[in-house]
Image 1 (tube, rainbow, N blue to C red):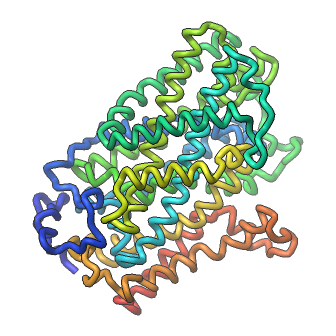
Image 2 (image 1 turned 90 degrees about the vertical axis):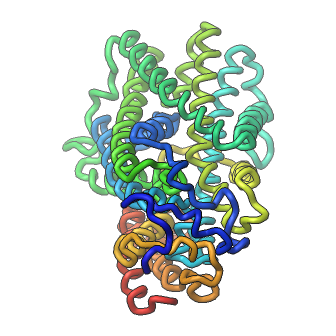
Image 3 (image 1 turned 180 degrees about the horizontal axis):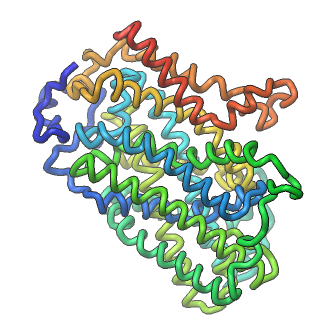
Length: 503
């Protein structure tokens, strides 16, 4: 199973020349083509900046709210967020390896384990989750516009909710306006996205630190949240229940970036070296997530002193300022930051994933438009309405699907193939990755083996079936859905692949 392409260095392989005349039009377009080593210009700083840019966002700021609401104190919440991101950065770096070595994107990488047609399964699952995230981030940007406009024209905030949607016409219009900006940037292409990320990283970090300084100076400290005891301490309402909350919370934190841990080859294909992508990601992700979630907790605690009530949403904090220049500047910073994170994290991958379905018909732009339309249909304001449901239903629920995919990809590439891919065969419908009519049933069975055990716990959690009728084992398994699914699929895949190499 040695690669039949030209090696330009021990870790970067030039796959482009070997594809000339050997590719199948049904599996190839320019967006899915390998990136030649000469075009791989992302260094260590680029990957660190990528993660600073994506992790410094409003959902990260608000992430600790659900954990504190479940009973954790601020240090337990920030530690849980940090640990979850230390764990998820490991499969992130491992899956990035193939992208860096061969220059291939995520849906093409999936063909090695799932088959040239079967790769549509992980690609579509990843794409649909990204559509949900795209909608959430677009809602956050539109909500920022709506609330800050409400400062200048309070009548905007008084409209009755629309049937089915459950939000006012003005609120929905702001959401659609911000959605249109996202679509415009997608149409402009990948270069515009890179410029946005370069602008956004320092801007939102600066905004967060300024908020932190304002809160500290205005409140004379960070208030009751930083000093309140954990609800799990002796004598507190949830004494002795810490671990029952910690493990599902940790799974939720892993799930926060479980999407990117799969499609990271979409970015690592531009890396100069394995060292750059690995160290850059290890530096950029866990620390930024911990810092920005701490800013959220600290500023929120100060609002309790300053305003007499707890404000978790930074937009709500900013609307308390009356200086129009501050409001306009804050609006611009929040929208630009949300826009950059949204497109980098939630459009690049699904655009490629939808292109995998029909490369000759679906381009990056069309894939991005499909993502945007599905993001509207999913009504994202309902996904984030409840912080607890956001973590324990949305984040854990989809992590049960993505964990098994990650386990299969890493088992196939590192253990079974020992990092060797036949890149021309990834673009051939008749090559070694055809398996059975384009589908690797070994991967499909391993995926189901990893995902299905979490289903009873999920159905019980959302109320689709009676929780009392589900054995406690399945409830516990759901709380570690990503980890359990990853491990089960990893083992099942290797056992079946060795038993049936071509199935």
